[in-house]
Length: 198
Image (cartoon, rainbow, N blue to C red; front, side, top):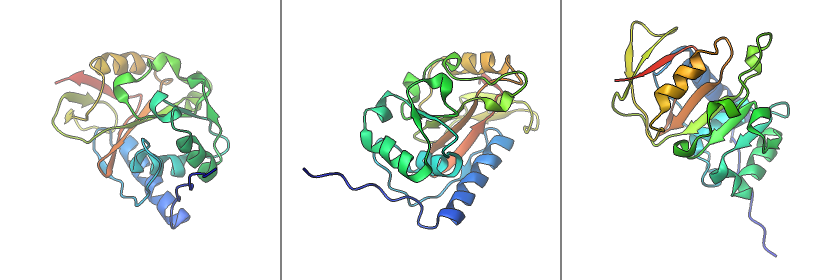
């Protein structure tokens, strides 16, 4: 019986993890402004290289990871993440510290994930959404880290995305944070940001 070879992780684990971590932090501190996220990772499909780089930089044995249906259907994805991060894979989105979403159009309602608690708002789920890229200005963003308001676009995203983000912001300081990863970039939408239709 032939077994599939495990996809390789970072060639330089320290340097590349630092680079991906830094890109994620800049993205969250500058909402809606995509940051460069270059990687040579070739993870098992449908996990994207950018989402894989974020997972390898942010996840460890203490951060349960939830995979959406598309990712969970491919055993090689869970094997890749377990081996390279040590993170346990959970089927319960409410237990996850990170959730990787390959198909944002079928994104679970944010209420399915952990918003944290009043005492520990940082114990919430961070969602890593795989997107095709960042183009157009389908949304307007306001909030901390944004001067005035800026236009933002990413595809694909569900049609009710602004309403989801409004409900999420109403929970502040609780709520989920989003990292959108694709096309060699990552953009952050923290719980503090207001997302409105353009």
